[in-house]
Length: 392
Image 1 (tube, rainbow, N blue to C red):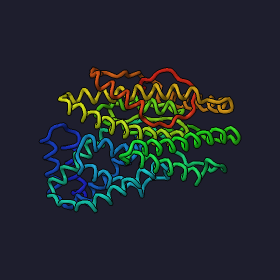
Image 2 (spheres, helix red, strand yellow):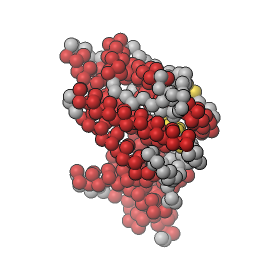
Image 3 (spheres, rainbow, N blue to C red):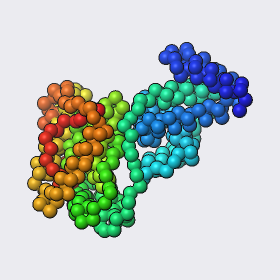
């Protein structure tokens, strides 16, 4: 790399990344577009930005989520390319990290098959690069998610048996969400709930019989606009029922869920399924409202999802309290203490966020009724007061 090329990139960065104006961005893009020798150095700097994001606690899915929210699809594709390029320089990572990379690769392959990428001029490409780098440069530090390779334990809840169990649960819920027949959906979801509960009990009893060094971990789950408050409360309810804690980061658009690995898996699966069920029910109810001459779509949706989240939380709390058996209580209590301590270490300061702007009576009624009809897998837990989302 020549000093002239490095100087071009440095000058472009000073002009564009550390200034707010579009004029400065255009100046930096013009410098890069005029120097074809700067392309490799520019890509290398991008990988450095990605590596810096990892050091600040970000993970691949987090970066893609924030880029998708703040910028455009072309920036998302570029960010994914940089993440995949940086992969060769990263150290060993855990299974969740690898799963995120696999998902990026699958999305890239699917996108390439769906539509060939349009060619752009050098100035447009340089502008895209600088817009992405400016966002990456300003990412704040996040709480690190220490992820370790799972230790193998013999028994019904380990290794391939666990993987097959979760695969079956996901498949059943996917069919339940896709079918147009309510009775079939209910039967499929009920079977998934049965497997989920059995999986939870197996894990708890195995932990009691064969204590190990397993400790709580954490994952981040996107909580996207619109109506993100209601979605955060719904996720909190699901997390609590599964012996986990959820802390919502509203500015970044995600919640961090803390718990043991098997419980984290259950939270992801059940939250996704309930959100799909809620969206389907809301669309159906909204269509009926419009057919009756109603037009206040936004307030109806907001109130619907708020009621759905509130009612789901109530159902989960009541059902969970009746499912804690004497043989599970000691290990659940131990896990509860461990999860709470881990959450407090990660988030020493949190506030409580309550739902705002719920004003549509019809939307609230429809949402509560939809929650009563929703199928959910309830897993035994220790009682915990409150249905509000914890906010970092």
